[in-house]
Amino acid sequence: MGKEYRFGETMITEEQLAKRAEELGRQISDDYKGEEVLCIGILKGSVMFMADLIKNITVDTAIDFMAVSSYGGSTKSSGVVRILKDLDSPIEGKNVIIVEDIIDSGITLDYLREYLKAMKPKSLKICTLLDKPERRARDIKADYVGFVIENKFIVGYGLDYDQKYRNLPYITCLEEV
Image (cartoon, rainbow, N blue to C red; front, side, top):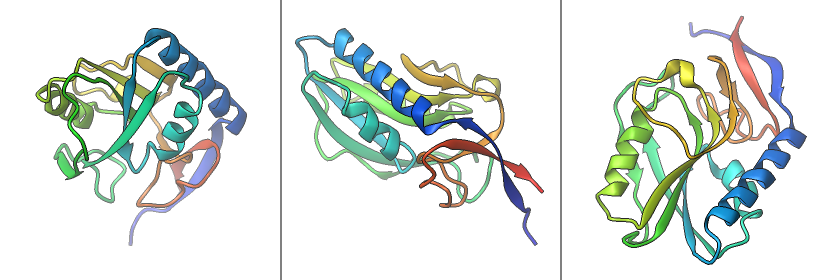
């Protein structure tokens, strides 16, 4: 029989998420004044955050998506990175922002950053909703960070456990029962 979990406290409210997406969108707009950006959402977890983020970016913005896996049905990263869906268009010469839901161990994002660098973008930055530096196994830092969080297993606002709880409009943690 598998482990059982329950929701812990609400860690980040719907209002806090909306406000932070607005602030990050403004910061990206200021940083790229007069330029275009390509936001690459990492599926599936970044979808809700990326939708709110790009609504607040005022420079010309294109979007694309990648699906990258390193988890499976576990609460811990497996360390094995697989690209399940690659980009639809070339990124050479473009200002690219990877939009991620959470940086945990950094293994997936480190792999992805090197993979995209090889495609010769004009610039490559990382925007993450959540940063969990306690668990970092790779030296990776985001250029834009929504919230720094403690080492808990997080769900909601796009983040899941075994494909559940993505639809919660706030962020909470799962605790073992």
